[in-house]
Length: 300
Image (tube, rainbow, N blue to C red; front, side, top):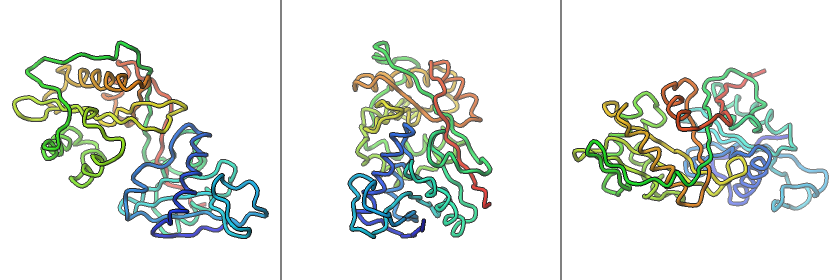
């Protein structure tokens, strides 16, 4: 199997990669690729290809003339972080090793996200650099939350004029989580323009004219472990508001928003070492369902 490297996918290549990702989702119950793969122009794209002995058994919708190479696996390398997202056909075991060899030739310190314990990347051996725990819970009618009125706090939907204040609050709330704290104005604008964004799903907690907390909910059209699920995308309050009950109120209202959309499951990611957040979500009946690992592949 050969690996071809390109700085930009053609529409046909992107379509084939999305089909492969859909096949893996059917196998693992998870999306191996995030929106950042398509939205960030700086990614390096690696395609594991092979010429089939005959045209049968190709990825549905990707039929090509006899003798043309067929994509069996794909990896996206972010040069700014050396982090990689990867997907491969479940019936192509040679695709992942070929991609890893090619990645390490170009980025010896690359780390690869294994999205779930049944993902194609879960077979990669190496040193674990990070682990995210995925928690989930079912939502019942009791999640239809009412208004919150304590500590002179107003909780309302996001407004475009909140952007600058939101960035400052986000950086202060998540100071110990660089991935979230480092969101720039450009990153925020990109998310606000995403198809899944709904201002009603970004709850802003405001007190004394400033943002003191927020809960950002994301509802994807792709199933999570076989069901549509509402993600607790980001939830936090300023350090001075911790212990006030505001975080629990924001969580409750956000789950109510998810339930009001007709969605009966919620999930979230949390760092394995973040004991405070784990205790908070477990007290709200979230339970462990999967794990994501960031692995530095073994060159051997």
